[in-house]
Image (cartoon, rainbow, N blue to C red; front, side, top):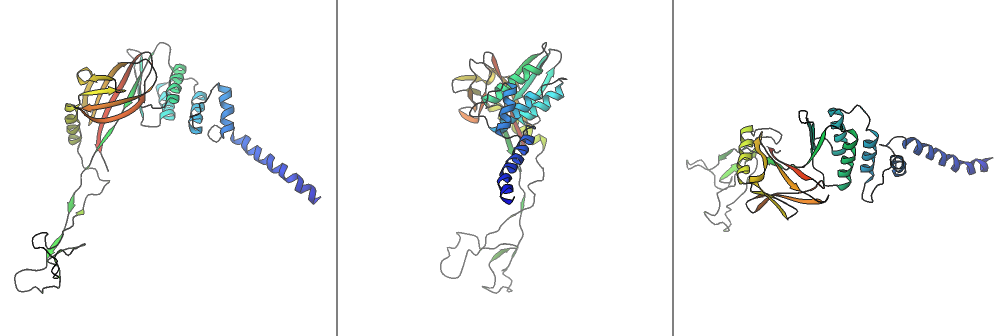
Length: 298
């Protein structure tokens, strides 16, 4: 009987493992690669060799989520799943019946997934306008330092030569002149004075005026945008070239013939101030939205 049970135990263990796998594969989030593969077969998805398991799960969830009602809030929730919070802008111009989505995409598979998703949820009487988004952030920070010290040798007859350095800091001191013949009079002060930071890193102090003024000065020297090192758009051709709330914004229109990972560079004179890559829609005028944001950096 013991031998029979030992022979059967591996079969029960394998059945238990298969049961656990079967349960986890009922949910996309917990499914393994084989489980995701079954969902993809059902939905007619053919993954590429470069698609990660995490991206394949996100794509399956997106396809399964395309059910009415289709509202702007529903769209934004799905875009958070695709891009992550804070990585896109989405709004509707109801008067013109235009749906705008600004986002940064440098992954071709993700680009096609967005196209397919929008085709399923967009009303037929609404125009979909996608703008590739370039959103660099410029950090501005401030520091405040203070130090305390005291004179140890005064010419009042009270000093005891050698008992203390000529000048000391409350926390740190460094001997610059020792009576050993190695000192060079005048090369350094009698002691180095160290400053301590009195403003914590997580304390905000930069005002909106400073951020907006900094952005305005950068806007004055932006001269052009160069795409894929071949297409140049001068600042005189920028659309909606503005500064507001510490953020420089402008749009660029450029004809495209392929969906490629494009090099996009912003110039101030002949100096590159930002260099990004993004996927560009084919067969239409590409709308690229540039936003350079000044914010306080900690």
